[in-house]
Length: 308
Image 1 (cartoon, rainbow, N blue to C red):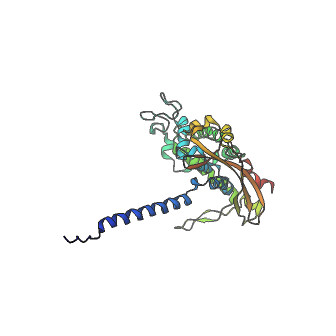
Image 2 (cartoon, rainbow, N blue to C red):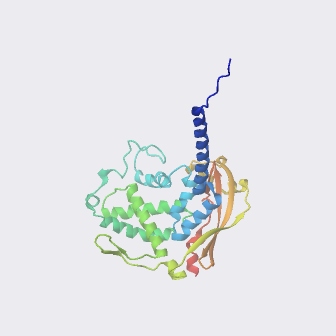
Image 3 (cartoon, rainbow, N blue to C red):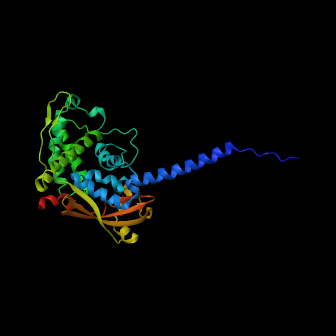
């Protein structure tokens, strides 16, 4: 009997090609993602942390690269441990990190007085202005002691708002609005600002200002941050210095940490002058790296320009 001619199995071939292409795309996507995502690169995590602080004195947003952001969106971490304890401070049954369902805090509309209900933004703007000196005094030596900053800032915010508005209303929106406005104003005080006009009416909204960085290094100053050196550090030594109590609030344990590195990050002007340095330890949890904010000292990054 004649041999039956074998036909080419296009269906099987198509499946093989599809799987091969899919695998190739997966590899490419993974490599691209790793290249773009800071968290996979320990040296870049350390550099970005320092750079965020240096460019605008912004220790607040620098924490998005640190351990508090491991299991929380950073804003949620602030809510759980610093805002809700204020908002629900007199609420029976409230516990830090506990379920809020059915609980009535000072963010309930029933606490809004007439001034809150009728404010066109003027009173809130005044509150933000009154909080700015408080913010500046708290971050004078940096954001390393964030617990003190948040605790004292929100304590004063409650007191000042009650005087201005005449009620006890307080929400996370009020707290974030004031804090983040102060963070932005502080950045402007360092970097300077340009004239700003309303794009529709042409009305000037703000005037150009000279920042402290410009006063010290010239109007066209530019800072660059680079990894100067990787320093020897053992995993055991790094773990021994970490604040284990703080780790609990991040929902992290020492056993979760599988590696550690320490980098010296150097800050230079455009002409190559070194103006500041900071040693930053980063730790690895699963595939990602985070700044160990419990041991870092970034105070120099907030004051280097004062010595110019």
